[in-house]
Image (cartoon, rainbow, N blue to C red):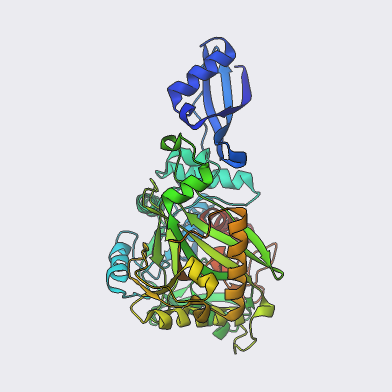
Length: 513
């Protein structure tokens, strides 16, 4: 079979299969060929909107079906047991890899299954009531399940990335995630994928235990000895993958109480900004007449202010701002989009770097950035007035340092309270954001739209804590058998990178057996 790759540029209205094939026929001079798109990127730079494609061509013969990796189904009911704390992407992909390597994963999830979580999310959204064990951050699937399911990653481990995407396709994700430059599944589609991953683990003889909060970690003479669950039940186990996610602050404190060293680390903090999606489309697509053939537009912005980065984070075209606190007395925002990205607003985190030098060293456990994060979230709750009402302000008013008048229209369902966010944020954070937003307006003329609204706070971009681990064995140096993993450990930033790290931890565990 004669195969060759072709770089192809086309306008949005020529992306549909029939039109693309006709254009390729004209280029090749005949119709006896087969093709598949290997990669596609939407390029809206320099005032012109077009797609850049990598196409694989086979002339005179049909292409074989695309080869995709699949998780290996093995029966592990009687195999050595490994506890996996957390049923997010790090935990579930660690469990899948453990099965391939001949271990029985026992997944411990403090929250409920992915379907039952919906009731708790409705309770937050409609009534402002937070279930501390089941919310946007805790529960099967982890924080990414109901806050968007973006799969974009900066990981350079392309082979590992392809395995993650292929496994997600195996469990029901659309095949388009394998070719899109910024793949996205959508909050409406992820739950069924998560449920199918669980079914696979159970069918192989693994276990998934919901409502199983780890309340003690037993370490003796530098070795893992067991776990306590829900303050009463004991699990004697010497191999544990700790994949709790970035919001499990109680687990961080628990580790310190167990005598283990943790480290404060930099993170990012700021606000969510919301614009009309139609306006962002106009800005990014330069008034292109082919907008009917284009997806809702996104953007990515970055600036340097007084030696610190200010940047957009988790941009959600056609999305919703969601209440993502894990405690009743805190307010935290995040964003998500359905698969069609068809809501009227575009939102994005707008955050600035928080370095250790920015934070007072006052926490008795040494977790100074965690204490700072919690303080800011508590101030946001107080500014909002309770019941997950969030403080909010028009973008221009924030720059002008005046409280917004009139109704603030946002997608944040628990409601907003108009305040001067300059007073609700640490002074240095507010100053960096004001200067950063003005720079964004210079880079993306029109960013300071009169209807743009800021909602606070965006504070869970990443973990403010790192759990140390040996760079080779991936075990905590003070607790052999404990493998800190994923976002909660400080080793990942998103669904794909967390899943990759889960697989790495499973493989490191198997090597040490």
